[in-house]
Length: 69
Image (tube, rainbow, N blue to C red; front, side, top):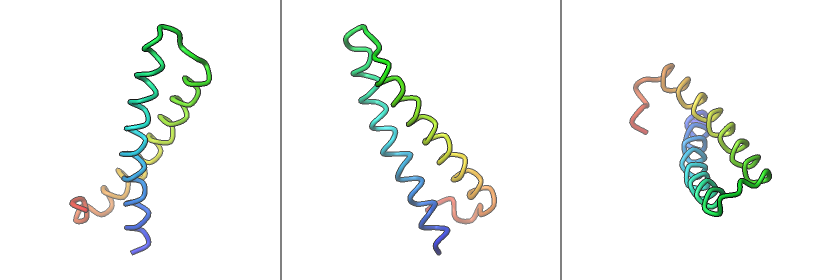
């Protein structure tokens, strides 16, 4: 069951990070200038999201019966 909690947490992070990324990317390009700090944060969140996606995908591959969580 702890495994399911961890996967649920990763899925939650993917959703949250998606919303944060949309905001950051919209505000980062609205003024025409790309702020290095904002781009660094975007890159960091994208890396975290990719890691969570890999963890979820690996779990779903190992446990296809739980894909409907």
